[in-house]
Image (cartoon, rainbow, N blue to C red):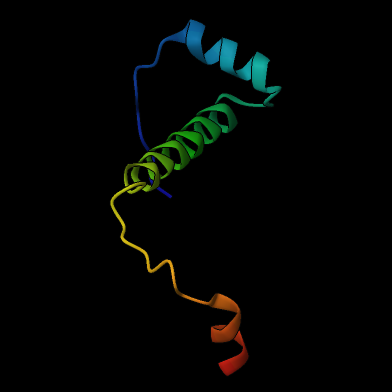
Amino acid sequence: MMATNLELNDELIREAVILGRHKTKKEAVTKAIEDYIRHVKQEKIISLFGTIDFDPDFDYKRQRRRS
């Protein structure tokens, strides 16, 4: 783990702690960072929609039987 000193908006942190029912500021910030990372990853996946070609004749059930 990395020790970090940040100047954060006290009101935002307080609101995050209350809304998330977190016990500590650290818990609220950690949850916020986890949610941010998840969100960015989802955006990357969503950006792929419509860009990947697929074979309409592919039979996934037949492929499963081969395994």
